[in-house]
Image 1 (cartoon, rainbow, N blue to C red):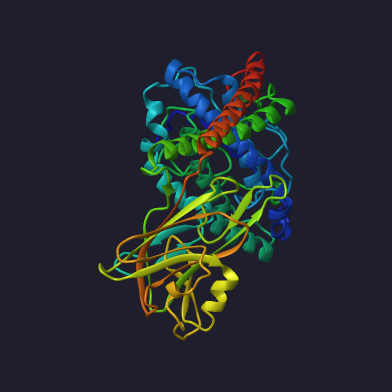
Image 2: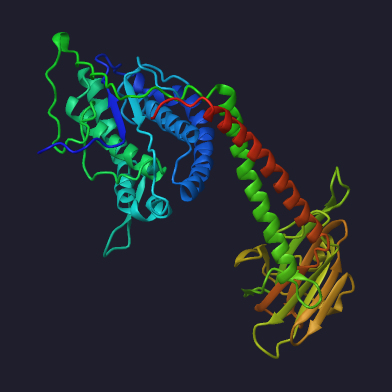
Length: 487
């Protein structure tokens, strides 16, 4: 079939003639330094892609310096993948650089687009790319993919296809001493597909990735036919991939200092977004979730048990630094110094039943309920209980005098309790001490400092955002001032 025009992303690779039979067993360990660095580089990649998104939407152009950085991250990632379990095509350790390294056995370049569609950028990375995402998910799958077994109740779990093929290749390499050329070509074709989709989703081109496997180490430049394996060179070595005149060198304007600044700026930027989102959420809670008495609650939860008592324990101490009260208990939402008053409301699940709710020192409650069948709540948001004992209480709870705060009767019973140091236990029972407690309950607190806390978080987020903007914008500007040719 006739050749089509080259795709803007081109990837070449040369299989090393003497790949070690056993080094692949430890390559995942040797590559850990690269994985650590790439974790931070990909954070910067995401942040800069968002910046590029807005630049394209408003100007129709991908900032060249950002383009070079992101292509460099893609190139670095592919080299590490080629060395390790993305292909295991070489034993040469990948260099720590965004730049193209001519002597390394694999190369990646993306042609810089002079203009990009301002409308297409809104949909191509999530909507138009969905068919490719499904295929790429099978190829790489993040380590695994999960598919539902239609007509049955079982989940089927399988490894990613590229990793599986590489595993077959390295096992055959260990047995025969030769990397199967057919598998190498297929693996490279799948990786080439993945990289093209990555470039498209990264907004680097408007050209839709082709649905085809361009197999082999040499990028066929859009050829629709699957290239046949070339004849072996003398000595059994694979001939080198011919150098391409259009292969661009890496982003030399991105120095180590600029890369570090962008990575730190990206981390600060992501942190600032978390702080701004959290501060905004706290302000929203403060303004919309308070009841008429100024309390913010957890919402009502149903608790049912066939025991005689339902309890939960909280331990309150003082912080070593702030000297404020700290609370530890199941589902606790009262943070250090956030509230001094807690309200507990309990209502019987069946109208007309008399219930009891109270709070007291844990040691007093323990003596009263010693040997009594008791369900201890371990999660306020659900039915998570721990049942102790088996007997009935000797007296009804209202007859005891040790309660710090208590209420009993029909309808909703509410108690308010001022936080105090020590170990405390909340108890819910039927007022007559009978078996089977079935109630709905909610816990609330006033959180008086909430507006100030939210404001402080927003201010901290704003400061970090300013710092992140400077750390990202200055290196981009300096890299732009000496940007080289198209990528």
